[in-house]
Length: 453
Image (cartoon, rainbow, N blue to C red; front, side, top):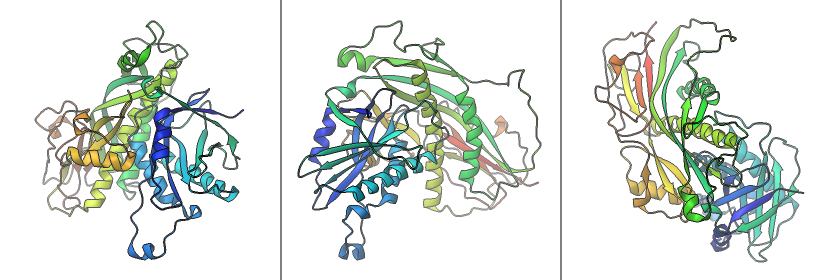
C-alpha cells in the first residue's frame, strides 16, 4: 500500500484555477509535512514563468520534455528559505492539457530528484534513517481532470514509482501547533591560511557545520520542562478542538547548549595560522509548526532545531548573494567592517494558522516583500499582515589603520549602542581588500576579521 497525502481542500481549487495561458503545461511545488503514517499538504505554488528573450520567443520550448529543471530547482531553493521548521517541499505537481505517457513520467522523476538534491546541498542537517524519504509527483490533466499521484524514494536513485492516495480535507490548515524560541548565538569561525583561498561562503558554511552540532546536541525545554522524546507533545494539556483552540496552541521552547565536552570525551587543542575570522553574534527568532494529530516531542524538537539551522544559514547565503550582485568596490584603509544580515519577516498563509517567512534588508520596503511573496508562492498577502520577528537595528561601520589584530575578538569592536536582537556582521581585512559597506537593518550579522601574519 502506498503513502496517503492529506491535502488542504483549497489546494484543489487553486490547482483547478491555474491558467495554462496557452501553454501545454504548468508546474509547481507541493509544501507540507511528513509523518510516519501520512503526509500533509497545506500549500501548492506554481513555478513563476521564466522571462524569455526575443530569440526564444521565436522558437518557444513548450513541450513537457523541455521542462527547465534548473529554473524549477532554483524556485524550490527560494521557497525552501521561506518555510519555517517542520515544513518541507514534499514534491512537485504538473498540469498538462493532454494525458502523458511513460516518457513524461521520467521527466517528472528527474525533476523531483533534482529539486531534492539542490535543496539538500544547502542544509546544515541530514535526514535520519527513520524519516520518510518518499517525495511525491502529482500529474493533473486539465481536459480530463484525471489525477495521477506517485512517489519516489529520494534516497534510492534507482527507485521506481509507487502509487499514492491524494485525499482532500477541509480545515487541514488550522490543525497545527506552533513552537517559538529565541536563540542567542556567538559563533567564531577562524579562517586558516590554507582555506582563505576558498570562497567566503564555503568557509562560513564549514564553520557553521561545527556550530550545528551544538544545536543538534542541545537540551530543549518545552514550556520550561524537559520531556521524553517519545512523549506526546500535548500530554498534560487539553488537545485543541476546533479552529480557534488549535490556532491558539503555542509552545515556548528554550535551548541549552553544552559549554564543555563530557569528561569521557577527549579534547585536543590545535594551533592554526589564520588569515582572518568570521564572527556571528546576536539573537535568532525561530518558529516551527507540527500537525496536531498525535504529535511527538521528538518531532517538535527536530522541527525547531532545523529551523534554527536553516534561518542562520539562509541569512548568510542571502548576504553573500547581495554582495556579489552589488559588486561592492574596494575602499582603502578599511580593515574591519560591520554587515547586517536580513531580518526575518513572518507572513500568514490566508485561512491558515501557519505562517511562512521571508527576509528583508533595511533598504527594502514592505511592498517589495509582498511582491516577492506573491512571485515565489503565488498567494496574495496584505502588507499589514507582515510580522517582523526581530527589532530593527542600525549597522555600524568600523575602520582602522592597523593591519594586525588578535584572533580573540573582544568587546572593543562592538557597536557602542546595544543591539539586543540583531546578529552583527563584522568584517576585518587587510587594508584595501574589501569595501566599507553596510546595510541599514536586520536581525543576524556576521563578522569577518582579516589580519596579517
